[in-house]
Image 1 (tube, rainbow, N blue to C red):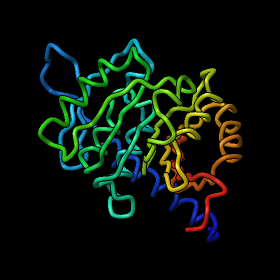
Image 2 (cartoon, rainbow, N blue to C red):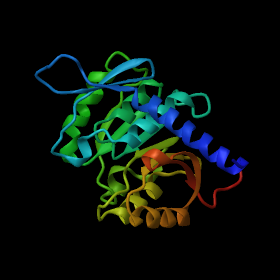
Image 3 (cartoon, rainbow, N blue to C red):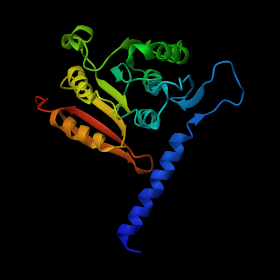
Image 4 (tube, rainbow, N blue to C red):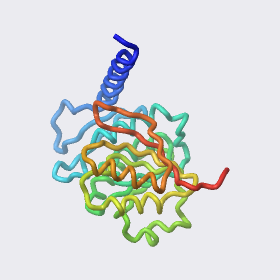
Length: 236
Protein backbone atom coordinates (compact mmCIF):
# COMPACT_ATOMS: atom_id res chain seq x y z
CA UNK A 1 0.00 0.00 0.00
CA UNK A 2 1.46 3.38 -1.03
CA UNK A 3 1.72 6.36 1.29
CA UNK A 4 -1.17 8.15 -0.43
CA UNK A 5 -3.54 5.27 0.24
CA UNK A 6 -2.40 5.06 3.85
CA UNK A 7 -3.03 8.79 4.30
CA UNK A 8 -6.50 8.46 2.80
CA UNK A 9 -7.35 5.59 5.18
CA UNK A 10 -6.12 7.63 8.17
CA UNK A 11 -8.23 10.61 7.10
CA UNK A 12 -11.33 8.40 6.78
CA UNK A 13 -10.68 6.90 10.22
CA UNK A 14 -10.12 10.36 11.75
CA UNK A 15 -13.33 11.63 10.20
CA UNK A 16 -15.33 8.71 11.55
CA UNK A 17 -13.84 9.11 15.01
CA UNK A 18 -14.59 12.84 15.26
CA UNK A 19 -18.08 12.46 13.78
CA UNK A 20 -18.84 9.67 16.26
CA UNK A 21 -17.71 11.95 19.10
CA UNK A 22 -19.89 14.81 17.81
CA UNK A 23 -22.97 12.62 17.42
CA UNK A 24 -22.43 11.15 20.88
CA UNK A 25 -23.14 14.61 22.30
CA UNK A 26 -26.84 14.07 21.59
CA UNK A 27 -29.14 11.78 23.51
CA UNK A 28 -32.81 10.81 23.64
CA UNK A 29 -34.58 11.01 27.02
CA UNK A 30 -35.33 7.62 28.58
CA UNK A 31 -38.56 8.82 30.18
CA UNK A 32 -41.60 9.88 28.19
CA UNK A 33 -42.68 13.43 29.03
CA UNK A 34 -45.60 15.62 27.96
CA UNK A 35 -43.23 17.73 25.83
CA UNK A 36 -40.89 15.81 23.55
CA UNK A 37 -37.29 16.98 23.56
CA UNK A 38 -33.81 15.95 22.48
CA UNK A 39 -30.79 16.29 24.73
CA UNK A 40 -27.24 17.48 24.06
CA UNK A 41 -24.06 17.82 26.11
CA UNK A 42 -22.02 20.92 25.26
CA UNK A 43 -20.04 23.51 27.25
CA UNK A 44 -20.39 21.48 30.44
CA UNK A 45 -24.19 21.59 30.41
CA UNK A 46 -27.09 19.34 29.52
CA UNK A 47 -29.15 21.17 26.92
CA UNK A 48 -32.75 20.19 26.22
CA UNK A 49 -34.12 21.20 22.85
CA UNK A 50 -37.76 21.09 21.81
CA UNK A 51 -38.15 20.57 18.07
CA UNK A 52 -41.08 21.13 15.75
CA UNK A 53 -41.17 18.21 13.34
CA UNK A 54 -43.58 19.97 10.98
CA UNK A 55 -41.21 22.88 10.43
CA UNK A 56 -37.93 22.62 8.50
CA UNK A 57 -36.28 25.37 10.53
CA UNK A 58 -37.15 23.96 13.95
CA UNK A 59 -35.11 20.76 13.78
CA UNK A 60 -31.53 20.25 14.97
CA UNK A 61 -29.49 19.38 11.88
CA UNK A 62 -25.99 17.80 11.96
CA UNK A 63 -24.33 21.06 10.87
CA UNK A 64 -25.47 22.66 14.13
CA UNK A 65 -23.80 19.87 16.12
CA UNK A 66 -20.60 20.33 14.13
CA UNK A 67 -20.56 24.08 14.82
CA UNK A 68 -21.32 23.59 18.54
CA UNK A 69 -18.53 21.03 18.83
CA UNK A 70 -16.13 23.39 17.09
CA UNK A 71 -17.00 26.33 19.35
CA UNK A 72 -16.45 24.18 22.43
CA UNK A 73 -13.22 22.51 21.33
CA UNK A 74 -11.70 25.73 19.91
CA UNK A 75 -12.75 28.05 22.73
CA UNK A 76 -9.23 29.45 23.12
CA UNK A 77 -8.73 30.21 19.44
CA UNK A 78 -12.26 31.57 18.98
CA UNK A 79 -12.94 33.03 22.40
CA UNK A 80 -16.63 33.82 22.85
CA UNK A 81 -16.35 35.50 26.26
CA UNK A 82 -17.93 38.99 26.15
CA UNK A 83 -18.00 38.90 22.34
CA UNK A 84 -20.98 40.24 20.40
CA UNK A 85 -22.36 37.31 18.44
CA UNK A 86 -25.32 36.97 16.09
CA UNK A 87 -26.66 33.71 14.74
CA UNK A 88 -28.66 33.81 11.53
CA UNK A 89 -31.16 31.04 10.89
CA UNK A 90 -30.94 30.01 14.54
CA UNK A 91 -33.77 27.48 14.26
CA UNK A 92 -34.06 25.63 17.57
CA UNK A 93 -31.36 27.83 19.13
CA UNK A 94 -28.79 25.13 19.95
CA UNK A 95 -25.80 27.02 18.51
CA UNK A 96 -26.87 30.28 20.19
CA UNK A 97 -27.29 28.45 23.49
CA UNK A 98 -23.79 26.98 23.30
CA UNK A 99 -22.27 30.35 22.37
CA UNK A 100 -24.09 31.91 25.34
CA UNK A 101 -22.86 29.21 27.71
CA UNK A 102 -19.35 29.96 26.45
CA UNK A 103 -19.75 33.59 27.55
CA UNK A 104 -20.92 35.46 24.45
CA UNK A 105 -23.48 38.25 24.15
CA UNK A 106 -25.78 36.49 21.71
CA UNK A 107 -28.54 37.67 19.41
CA UNK A 108 -30.40 34.66 17.98
CA UNK A 109 -32.40 35.41 14.84
CA UNK A 110 -34.87 33.66 12.58
CA UNK A 111 -38.23 34.00 10.86
CA UNK A 112 -41.19 35.21 12.94
CA UNK A 113 -42.96 31.83 12.91
CA UNK A 114 -39.92 30.21 14.56
CA UNK A 115 -39.35 32.75 17.33
CA UNK A 116 -41.71 31.18 19.86
CA UNK A 117 -39.92 27.83 19.95
CA UNK A 118 -36.54 29.56 19.66
CA UNK A 119 -37.27 31.79 22.66
CA UNK A 120 -38.56 28.84 24.68
CA UNK A 121 -35.41 26.77 24.09
CA UNK A 122 -33.04 29.65 24.76
CA UNK A 123 -34.79 30.75 27.95
CA UNK A 124 -35.04 27.20 29.28
CA UNK A 125 -31.36 26.44 28.71
CA UNK A 126 -29.65 29.75 29.57
CA UNK A 127 -31.57 31.24 32.49
CA UNK A 128 -29.23 31.64 35.48
CA UNK A 129 -26.49 29.83 33.54
CA UNK A 130 -25.01 32.51 31.28
CA UNK A 131 -22.98 35.64 31.84
CA UNK A 132 -25.11 37.51 29.31
CA UNK A 133 -28.81 36.91 28.70
CA UNK A 134 -29.31 36.02 25.00
CA UNK A 135 -31.64 38.10 22.87
CA UNK A 136 -34.09 36.68 20.31
CA UNK A 137 -34.93 38.85 17.32
CA UNK A 138 -36.76 38.51 14.03
CA UNK A 139 -34.59 38.53 10.91
CA UNK A 140 -35.96 37.85 7.46
CA UNK A 141 -32.96 37.71 5.14
CA UNK A 142 -32.66 40.78 2.98
CA UNK A 143 -35.76 42.45 4.46
CA UNK A 144 -35.68 45.80 6.29
CA UNK A 145 -32.02 45.31 7.22
CA UNK A 146 -31.28 49.03 7.52
CA UNK A 147 -34.26 49.55 9.83
CA UNK A 148 -33.87 46.49 12.06
CA UNK A 149 -30.08 46.15 12.00
CA UNK A 150 -28.64 49.59 11.08
CA UNK A 151 -25.03 49.40 9.97
CA UNK A 152 -24.04 52.05 12.48
CA UNK A 153 -24.98 49.76 15.36
CA UNK A 154 -23.74 46.47 13.89
CA UNK A 155 -20.73 45.64 16.03
CA UNK A 156 -20.74 41.86 15.82
CA UNK A 157 -17.48 40.08 16.50
CA UNK A 158 -18.86 36.81 15.16
CA UNK A 159 -21.65 35.71 12.86
CA UNK A 160 -22.64 32.07 13.33
CA UNK A 161 -24.56 30.08 10.74
CA UNK A 162 -25.38 26.37 10.44
CA UNK A 163 -27.10 24.84 7.43
CA UNK A 164 -28.52 28.10 6.11
CA UNK A 165 -27.84 27.15 2.46
CA UNK A 166 -30.20 24.59 0.96
CA UNK A 167 -32.95 24.43 -1.68
CA UNK A 168 -34.65 27.73 -0.86
CA UNK A 169 -35.12 30.76 -3.14
CA UNK A 170 -33.49 33.32 -0.84
CA UNK A 171 -29.78 32.74 -1.44
CA UNK A 172 -29.15 36.27 -2.77
CA UNK A 173 -30.98 37.70 0.25
CA UNK A 174 -28.85 35.51 2.51
CA UNK A 175 -25.67 36.84 0.90
CA UNK A 176 -26.98 40.40 1.27
CA UNK A 177 -27.63 39.73 4.96
CA UNK A 178 -24.13 38.37 5.58
CA UNK A 179 -22.69 41.45 3.90
CA UNK A 180 -24.92 43.87 5.82
CA UNK A 181 -24.14 42.43 9.27
CA UNK A 182 -20.36 42.27 8.77
CA UNK A 183 -17.85 44.86 9.85
CA UNK A 184 -14.26 44.68 8.64
CA UNK A 185 -13.27 42.72 11.74
CA UNK A 186 -16.30 40.41 11.92
CA UNK A 187 -15.55 36.69 11.68
CA UNK A 188 -18.14 34.38 10.12
CA UNK A 189 -18.15 30.77 11.32
CA UNK A 190 -20.38 28.81 8.98
CA UNK A 191 -21.12 25.08 8.86
CA UNK A 192 -22.68 23.83 5.64
CA UNK A 193 -23.90 20.50 4.40
CA UNK A 194 -23.45 20.00 0.67
CA UNK A 195 -26.47 18.40 -1.01
CA UNK A 196 -26.95 19.93 -4.45
CA UNK A 197 -25.09 22.05 -6.99
CA UNK A 198 -26.78 25.14 -5.51
CA UNK A 199 -24.46 24.94 -2.51
CA UNK A 200 -21.36 25.11 -4.71
CA UNK A 201 -22.78 28.04 -6.66
CA UNK A 202 -23.53 29.92 -3.45
CA UNK A 203 -19.97 29.37 -2.21
CA UNK A 204 -18.68 30.86 -5.48
CA UNK A 205 -20.92 33.91 -5.05
CA UNK A 206 -19.90 34.20 -1.40
CA UNK A 207 -16.23 34.31 -2.40
CA UNK A 208 -16.88 37.45 -4.43
CA UNK A 209 -17.51 39.38 -1.20
CA UNK A 210 -15.63 37.40 1.44
CA UNK A 211 -12.28 35.77 2.01
CA UNK A 212 -13.28 32.17 2.67
CA UNK A 213 -11.19 29.54 4.44
CA UNK A 214 -12.18 25.93 4.95
CA UNK A 215 -11.14 25.16 8.52
CA UNK A 216 -12.61 21.68 8.91
CA UNK A 217 -14.26 18.99 6.84
CA UNK A 218 -16.42 16.00 7.70
CA UNK A 219 -16.74 13.92 4.51
CA UNK A 220 -19.00 11.26 6.02
CA UNK A 221 -21.56 13.99 6.76
CA UNK A 222 -20.89 16.04 3.59
CA UNK A 223 -20.32 19.00 5.93
CA UNK A 224 -17.64 21.67 5.73
CA UNK A 225 -16.86 24.33 8.30
CA UNK A 226 -15.76 27.72 7.01
CA UNK A 227 -14.26 30.89 8.41
CA UNK A 228 -14.86 34.07 6.46
CA UNK A 229 -14.15 37.80 6.63
CA UNK A 230 -14.99 40.69 4.33
CA UNK A 231 -12.73 41.28 1.35
CA UNK A 232 -10.75 44.49 0.94
CA UNK A 233 -10.35 45.07 4.63
CA UNK A 234 -8.02 47.86 5.68
CA UNK A 235 -4.72 46.71 7.11
CA UNK A 236 -4.74 46.52 10.91
